[in-house]
Image 1 (tube, helix red, strand yellow):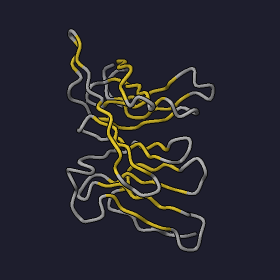
Image 2 (cartoon, rainbow, N blue to C red; image 1 turned 45 degrees about the vertical axis):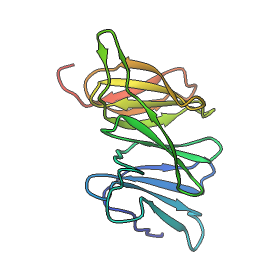
Image 3 (cartoon, rainbow, N blue to C red; image 1 turned 90 degrees about the vertical axis):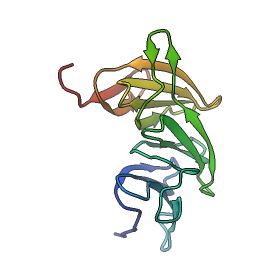
Image 4 (cartoon, rainbow, N blue to C red; image 1 turned 135 degrees about the vertical axis):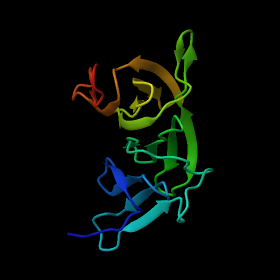
Length: 180
């Protein structure tokens, strides 16, 4: 096999739909980053760390935590923003930050203005992102076309993992919280 060095503490990992690119979410200590590894099956895979230096970059990627998903057309990678309560969007070919999706929501007695976005998964058609908010004890559903939060659904204490059923009619959330 081949060993490829990425930034410290790779905690999340995803593979592009075409099987040619791997992305890691590197969190824990600086630099909080993602590593994009292109042409993984070639003799000389291309490795790009974002941000590229040894320090976390508030303007590019202020926070990252485990969740990654690649668009159906392999053009963008969605990155969970941890305590920033956002999902970041990066161009998969260039590594350039394109946008972010704010997962905050306040209505009536619900206040999700603070959150910690963790694991996420994308629908087969690429139109919906499902993510867990580990502080808000909720699952969020984001429309990737409008880049807007559509739903906030309570899911119990400390949601940690998320996946879709094969027919995408159910979303499963794994919780690590006790007493609920």
